[in-house]
Image (cartoon, rainbow, N blue to C red):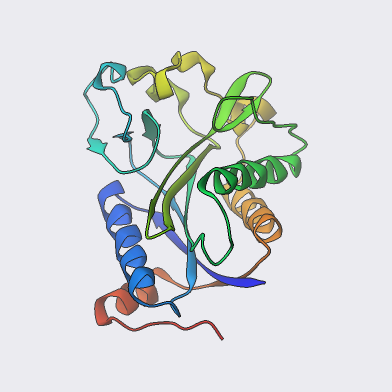
Length: 228
């Protein structure tokens, strides 16, 4: 069982969370003893374009737009959406990139099952779907076979913001959220708990937590928190 350290970044600007991811990837690439991490975060309104991103799928340029390393096209992040960024070494887990993406989908499916939501994959598509609607998007990147970027689960997301884009080339109407599916606001902390439980099970991981301040100090000082 691999140890994974969880850090809840809270509500954080996209660029800052992106820098934290890259700093963790760099440390793991240079130190085989540096542990795996799982970052949880909510972002202010932002649009990101992946490696295959088509700017024609950005219909309205009223939000900040970032061109990033992950796979896929265009997506939206914003309040009420739970984003998870695993920083893990695929070689230690003998995982292919495709297998890793399937595991991310599986952990979302298992987490939603705790809310009596029957989610599924769709053949040939990436992400997690419920009755033909997309509730979670996945876009990942790897550097030295260390993952970053990850998944975005619509919890209490204002879905109208998806109408500023064609999410992954689809009509914005394809998107849904837990709030829509359950007909009520959903406790974000409960969703985080469900996601962490599913992550631990799917990735056979022993989870521990670290605060943002401690993580920031570790990155600034270059201190390595070793697996024990």
